[in-house]
Length: 122
Image 1: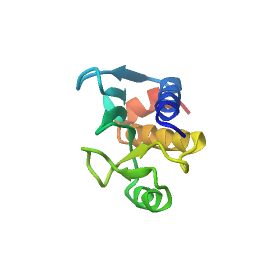
Image 2 (image 1 turned 180 degrees about the vertical axis):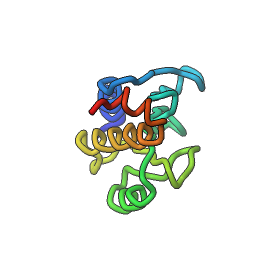
Image 3 (image 1 turned 120 degrees about the vertical axis):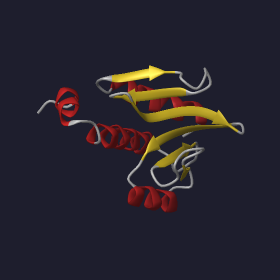
């Protein structure tokens, strides 16, 4: 997956999720996606490399970093809870979709119960 496809696919997946907010609190070069007021994904270019950063379960994060060349600890984020995805041959649209959905769910799981029920009705 190339850099442009990575960013476009991640944005498309995020924008299809319910109750998200797309904003630019850190400036126009950082696309930030929130649910319930909490960030679950951001995209930017750092050192000339496009990246998509998402929250990740710490154990899954370590495993994914070992499996995929295009996944690294979160750039300028908590390295335990965030990963950054870079364009690479081993990064597929399905993987990006799964990682974005996992991130959204991790954030929703930490919201108050009433917000969780509103965002994810049973």
